[in-house]
Length: 141
Image: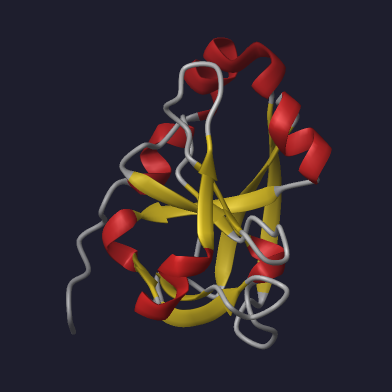
């Protein structure tokens, strides 16, 4: 993927939840077929949690849903119900950003790969998804 890192803005439908995320203009997104993602139609890219910044005023509008292992934190807006980001089970040290919730204009390319959430352990081991939330050193030139 792209070595350039830029700041993308985004949030939920009603705009009460707003955030910034540092990521390349071209991202690798995951389309998952687990029971939650398939119902929501969620396709997301994952960044280290240090590259995600939630607007302080947005916190009052968020609520969290968990199930199964309770590792994933499905975070959504209490007003409009949109999950614009969440903490994924595959990357509890990162943030999964719903790419369709990024403000228009900064994402130039989205490569979508499949994550078989119905066979979670096997897909986790085969896809390398856990590396998506690791901090990559960025040398200034």
